Length: 195
Ligand SMILES: Cc1cc2nc3c(=O)[nH]c(=O)nc-3n(C[C@H](O)[C@H](O)[C@H](O)COP(=O)(O)O)c2cc1C
Image 1 (cartoon, rainbow, N blue to C red):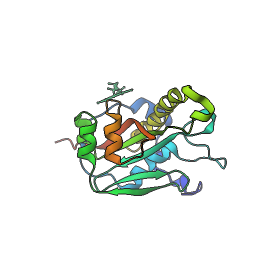
Image 2 (cartoon, rainbow, N blue to C red; image 1 turned 30 degrees about the vertical axis):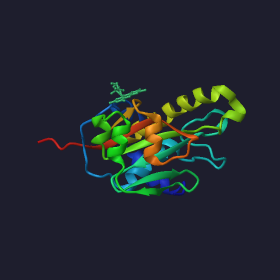
Image 3 (cartoon, protein in one colour; image 1 turned 30 degrees about the horizontal axis):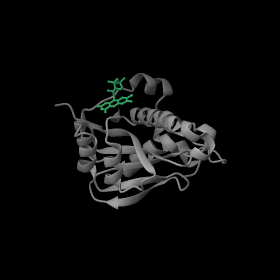
């Protein structure tokens, strides 16, 4: 998506102050699927490229960007292709039940319409930062998650971060290579309609 197209962003309709005030970890999801463009905007908020040098919505030590985003949705698992600024299907089928198991069977993951997995690619930062790379990956996952949580608020979604997960089990669910380590999840969905 071009920078011009971003003018029509649904994220532009709500002030930053409203998003900061309104952000809450909410778990009262319904399973109604989220449209792909909603999932796209969440990922763009987390990792979208916002300048010609390739820098992004979230800061990264040395501008290295060690993180990748995967969206586990009912029909498919998507990867956010940052350079192409699009979601690409990497697996077909509903991996949400398996992801829920890998997150210690937390309802928040089981009941979400979609959960975004933030994974670090180990090795990207190591040449420059050595052992400190692990710390930076964790800090950066927090930046990315907060961006997505604020975007979810702007989009009127329920969302919450999830840190309790079996990293290796999540990696297996997504069939990621060994160098990829899932760090943090953001579960999202529309709120349950009030009766
Ligand atoms: C690092 C971290 C890990 C978390 N892990 C989980 C989790 O595994 N499951 C969950 O339901 N909520 C999780 N949360 C959400 C917290 O429970 C929530 O942020 C806290 O209750 C404060 O509420 P608030 O986010 O609405 O301000 C996590 C939050 C953080 C920052």
